[in-house]
Length: 524
Image (tube, rainbow, N blue to C red):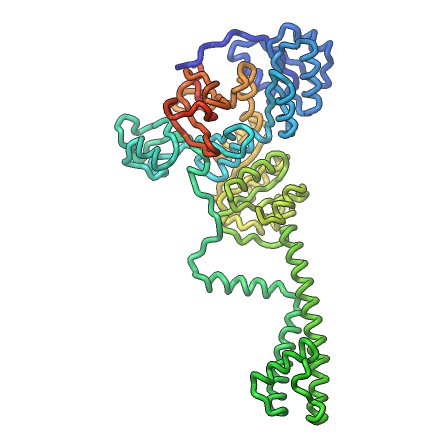
């Protein structure tokens, strides 16, 4: 069933950036009357002049969280019945505003964009990621794959869906007619992100245990202080010479002599092999051994302790090469990057984060070994060289600077031409141009991803955005329980029950208490 055109609404939009222009374009295309109030702060008299008393909705889309909240409160004071849609960077604050301000919906652009970026980092065929249910860390992914790429060529649609654990939303050319899927047939899939690809959980190697251990031992040995290596060699030589001497001088077995030398060098002797009556030479040798043992062992302990402290510090600071395989490299840990890391850690991915000024949460994850943290500048070649990009699963570039993202993305491709690069670009038009001219498959604009959801939230608090496939556009709506959903909104796309998200295609498979996601075809 297609969506019926909604009655035209009077909508006020505050703000003056690319997101505002995109949202207003969507609203006007839907037939709504839109008034833009640029600049900040926006006073109550300005809102009254713009028609807030007669407006059905106001979207506060300034890039300042505090300004947006002030606008919302001024608007609600002037018109208690106006619907409020807010833009907020702080996801925690966004949730609290929704809970405490009736008839209000809030979107964090960073969190909204992070879902699609994380999905593309794990599954390169993903073109849209969605957190479902909202507020959880479970991700759904919309993806495009050929039947051969998905490993379901020759299967029926039903068998393919069972095999993949996903829904097949659309079948493209060259097939689509017969029940069996042709190898080149393009599929649009929907499912939990875990269902698409298993994230590499650990280092894989075909060299066997010794082939892996030997290089690691050499690498660790190479990190030792040169003086420590000299002390170790000197200690071994003193031990061997003293064992041979006392074995001959005291007429001891080699094992007993070795025991005596070890006790003397490490504890200045137990006294169970007395030397008082053994002659001056043995006593002088034992004096030398005690002094040498105390000196070598204490210095060695000091160097080992310093090396352990340095290794721990280096691990936290990321001042060493990453040796993982199949890891995801995230460069930039601002609002978007931190959320991407959260999603990836939820999937138990191997994650390497590059951030020059990490926050407390990243440092905590580094201490607990959830991530590898490098505190260098991702735009520097020396830093990228530490990331082992040649063996990475994908590279996510999400700093707060478009120019820096481009520089890092191009540097990553220069090291490995086939590395999947997922890039964040602020301006939607610029992002599309980069995707087209530089043939980077995944270039996401937070404004472009959020605009459809923001414009749809004017009509319904259940709106989650839009997705397009097979020549049609669909509104995505989420309901906390199936009992509250409009069942004419077909098809149902996914449901969550007992913590498990599954893609489904019929209301008969849904329990009344399930959270559900539905796709509502938009008016052409």
